[in-house]
Image (cartoon, rainbow, N blue to C red; front, side, top):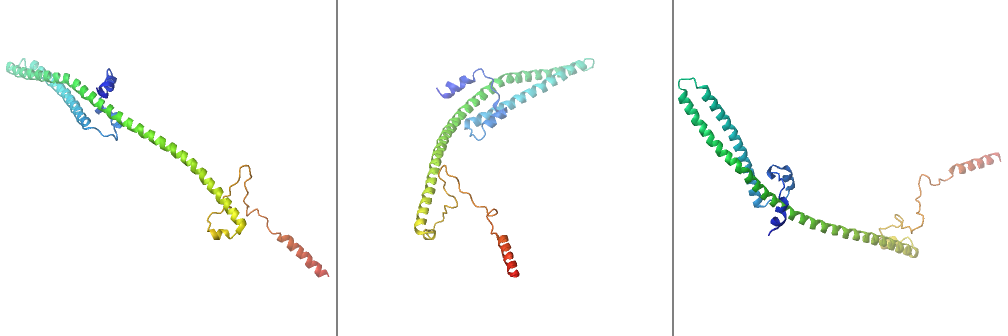
Amino acid sequence: MSRTDDVFRPALKGKKIPIISLDNKWYKLMAGIDHTPEMIEKEKKLKELLKQQGKVNNELKSIRKKKAALMDKIVNVMDEDDAETKQAEYSASINECNALLDKYQDELLDLPSQINEVNISLMLDTMEVCYDVIKEKTEKEKELDEWIAGIRIELKKNVVRRQECKIKIQQMYSYMHDIFGPEVIDIFDMQYNPGDNPIVPPGSAKPKKSDPETAEKPQTDSVQGNSGQNDSGNTEN
């Protein structure tokens, strides 16, 4: 027994299944999913049956209308001289209409069951395909979840490693600076300047950058004032 017979077909039992080829939701569901050759053939067959059903209904309406007109003509020619001839002609046409009505009514009775059979078969194929796609996407989702979790762990490790590198660089820079002096930057061709991004131990206050606008300005005014006093004193002398 297949999954279709064991699971899917019993699930559809007693359910009112919409005509798939007329359901826009079905086309949205199957968007981006490859149809099997069997599904393509069944969808084509379903559309043909629906088209034939519409054609039969139209034919029945047309024939009934024609039959009603013929019956009116039979009544209307009753008082005419050639009434018998015309009535016979009209009656023959009515018999033809009756034969066509029987034919199309029989066909119309069979079409719904044919449509339902193909429609359910196409729905079962759809469920089979969707099951496989959902299974595949679920496995892919699990794989991506594991990858993301691994990347997060590795990212945290690399953040710690980067911090350790910064601390080690600053320690080595400070040590060599104390021993060799400022020229160590030229000697080791160092591009890293710990002063640009100093690492502050936990609990310590972060160093404040000096603000050029609020930096202490030279007291030129007082100097000039003292100079003026000296000049005055010299003049008095």
